[in-house]
Image (tube, rainbow, N blue to C red; front, side):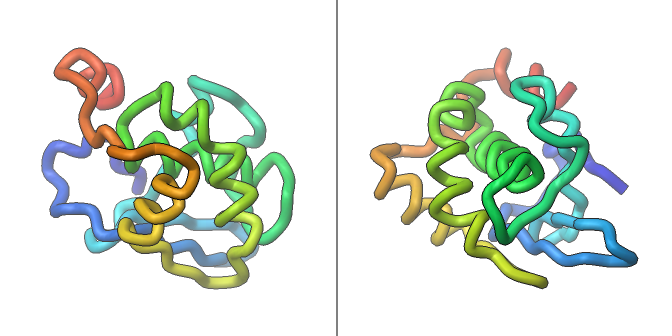
Amino acid sequence: MYDENPTHRPPLTGYRGRYAHRHAIVERLPDRTRLSPARSRTLRTHSRGFEWGYAGSGPSQLGLAILLDYTRDEAVALDYYQAFTREVITGLDGTWELSTAEIDTVLRALGVTTPNRVTSRTAQERLDG
């Protein structure tokens, strides 16, 4: 089940990806709600689903979706998802976990000094759907 309403979630600690029956599944941790490509596809459509471990459309969609979900900032997600995908998503293999600390480290290395987790009430409402 996809959870597009983040208001009742425990604090995010990271993301986990795995394959089940040849389908890529990405979950938010610790609550294991599934990350949907739907929100990220409103900004840019590379693929209908997620993939990882290579440079391509599915990994690009995953990079954008993770940054959008994590930062809750459309501008940051759009500006940095390609570099984030190159640095992180292309190197993931099989079943993986990515902590928020690892994401923060990559964002700092890319020049994002303070990820804006909630940009404003209006932006939050827009993200909540």
